[in-house]
Amino acid sequence: MKDLILKFLSRTALSRDPSPIRVISNYLLSLPPDKDILSLAAGSPAPVTFPIESMSVNLKSGENLKIEGAAMAAALQYNRTIGQVGILDFWSKIIEEMQPYPGPERQTIVTTGAEFGSYLALNALIDDGDSVLIANPVYPPMLLKSRAMSANVVSVLEDPVVGGLCPRNLRATLESWPDAKRKPKVLIVCPTGSNPSGANIPEKHRQEIYDIVCEHDLLIIEDDPYYFINYGKPLKTFLHYDSEGRVIRLDSLSKVLCPGFRLGFCTAPPKLVTYMERHYSVSLLNSCNLSQTVAGAYFEKVGIAGFKEHTQEITQYYKSQRDAIISALDLHMADLATWIVPEAGMFVWLKLKDIEDASSFAELAMDNGVAFVPGSAFVTEDVKSPYLRLAFSLVPEKQLEEAVMRLASSIRESTNVASIARYGA
Image (cartoon, rainbow, N blue to C red; front, side):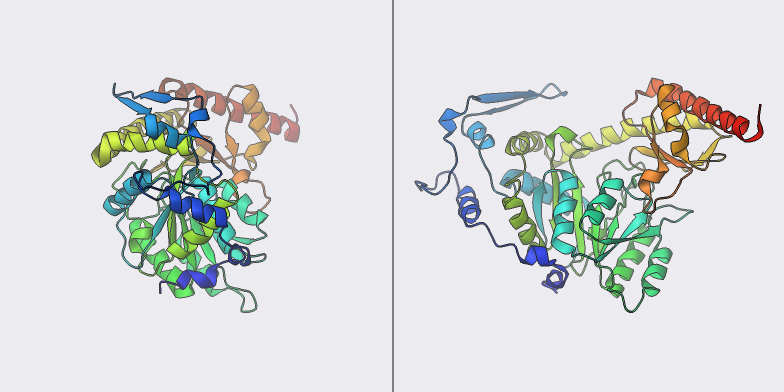
């Protein structure tokens, strides 16, 4: 079972040989600092030439992260492709405490955001013409990445009642799959606070989806950047159910620390991580070492308990934002649209009642001082959509009602113009 992943690897992945220079560099970088080796192997610049000597990062708590001396020199240097030891150790503890899993061994690699992690994973798995299953509505970059790899993207509708990927629809898609066509390799899911719908896949559906995946011999890419921004009880991850080594889990620090770090994690079967690392070693070499150092220093300062407290605080912040925009929608748009209150994440997914294509008034809304993303951006087909996505993360809570009022005004103005055009003044 430990080599289950081998049959899923793409021809591109299998063609990747390890970089001989990075093999030596990664080994040297994994040695303890007191190891007596005079390296004539690494083509790394001399730290004495770096113009930056130290760094001081002030936290909002009033505490300070001081990075200097050997730690600063290391932060400014190349590092292991797989990531710094300290940050990987910390994240492995997060995985063990919050997302315990059974089954075969896993390995984690630091990625340049979960976005790049999904690209590495897909590149290691998808050949031209392979099929990928993805929830509909879908996060656009995931769709675009899959199509760029010449994948056949097949959408599976979310559950119209409870939200999230619908296991009944997934089973129907797989059981009706044409015999002459290769079965899909991968199912891509955003299980918590799905972007754009804001829905969580219920736990009973997660177990059922995992069982279907095992039955039909697929892998799961679990893209879960909103795991820590969940407004209800913590949910078991797909990794938690993974007794067979089928889950490739993507985590992100963008939503819980800051996106400027460009840091994420991919936890997957070791053989897959090996091929992802080979790809990484001849493209980006490693994720930003300075970001890893600052994030690692923060984790060391606050510990597991402090990190959990921080995620609880930001969850409460976004919950207040969500409640504010839902109140504004109830007040100003009940006659114009329908929506489901998001269970996690940063988005509300609206369905307009009298407009078939939300993109038809996007420019008008912008002129009126409010922006949104039309629903047509989140579907796998080139069709009109009455849906639109509202992000409530960035606009201050006191201005969310004003944003909704501008949106409502734009919708009414658009429908009035359409009525005049259709029936005359």
